[in-house]
Amino acid sequence: MPYLKSKLLAIIATTDFAGYDGVLKQHAEFLSKFEKIDMFPPSFDDTVAIVANYVSLTGVAIEASLIAEIVRLAERYIGNQSEPQKSITIIDDLRTLGREVTLDDVKAVISDKANVPIGSLSMDETSVLLNLESIMQAKIIGQSDAVREV
Image (cartoon, rainbow, N blue to C red):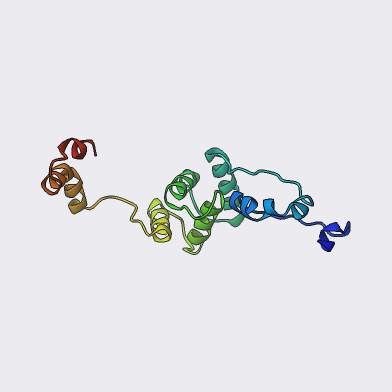
């Protein structure tokens, strides 16, 4: 607290909503030294613009059309970060390739980060999905309406 009262020291603190509610709200004296500013994630278009700017600054060889796909896939498959950080992390991983980035490269990096296969389905997977209702009907007895809905 003595440091927070000093006019010679400027402090900027960040936290998420859980940290604010769980820690800071319980310490009113500490909280009174800060101004609360709520920050919300940027829109999809704003995120694409931020990531495109980052790409131009870092010199990664990537087509502009892939940037929107990176943001879309990152939003869908990566949950432990917020935008634009998760897309920027993907760009950093792609930069290590040292060559022109393709859609397959993007899918491979995101698939590796998320531990989820991204891409075209194999013939076996396609067959299973096309016959999924009959497979489920054989294993789930008395729930034909529910299986049909699924």
